[in-house]
Image (cartoon, rainbow, N blue to C red; front, side, top):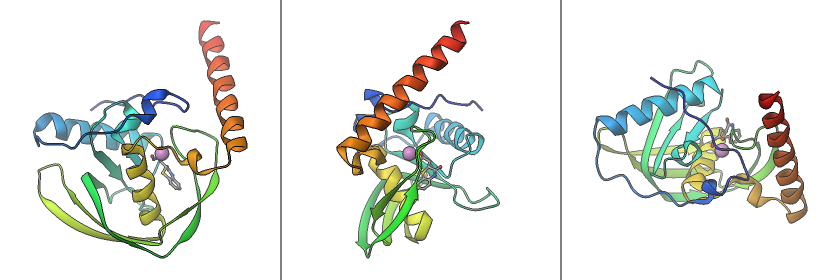
Length: 172
Ligand code: GNR
Ligand code: NI
């Protein structure tokens, strides 16, 4: 098992579009395990492969309080989306930023698991939000892109400043 490095906004690699998974092998299952470990350790309720610089359609999610309900979504596609909800979102790639985003209230998703089996999942509330947030990552979209240009600019400069300060304290 290994912890993976999470890319920080505004890293341009967060805007790459992920390719579908075609081979369901041990390397894929190792990636899923490492992503799950990285998500639990962060801690976060979801992680997309894009965030660990792997540009394949792989997502792990666990919104349970007990952290024992791991969901693995490979090549996810939305079959149905309806209603709307506003949720305060955060992102492991944009630490410290929490902003409200409007999403579908209810989604039906089809995906493969890490063994290549296809399943359907119906979700609402935080799980539905999380699925949409992670699927955006696979398309190269970060949640701050839903905010005003002014907020995006402020968040970008705050992240860049924090990255510079971290580099300085590492050098010292
Ligand atoms: O840990 C996370 N929490 C969260 C809270 C509200 C809406 C979405 C999320 S996803 C986020 C982890 C993450 O960055 N996934 O990409
Ligand atoms: Ni995120």
